[in-house]
Length: 147
Image (cartoon, rainbow, N blue to C red; front, side, top):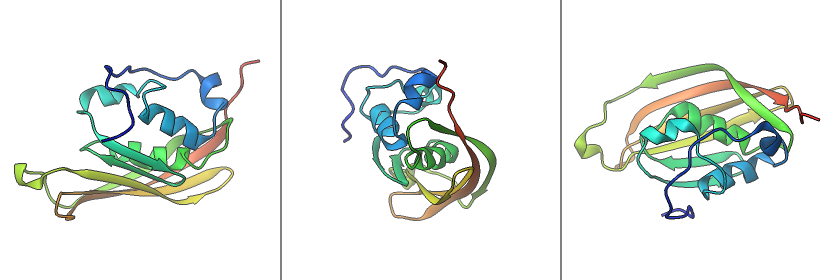
């Protein structure tokens, strides 16, 4: 499984000053470890296995491709930097069925620059068959520290 605690998950939005104080990879890992609240959208998704390395985030669940791509980008950002999605394109290849088994969503960065970043994501079934894929372009920006 993952390294999150067995306690009930907390959902919410992390304050900007906390986000700004951490490198992106540390922020993503803190969410996965249960040290920071999970985004509210995760209330609609069953618990999942996950991992985070710089530029690659893997989520084993049928969740939003946008989240996997955005978190992959965030994992590459230094402290004090954030992102927002500018564009998102998704292609659905085949539907999910009971026979699909565990669904895996993987987001990977393509390019992370000072002002823009691009990423792609794929959803595959337990047999490795492609169910959907997506690309995104994100705006990279400095997070105001509030002081």
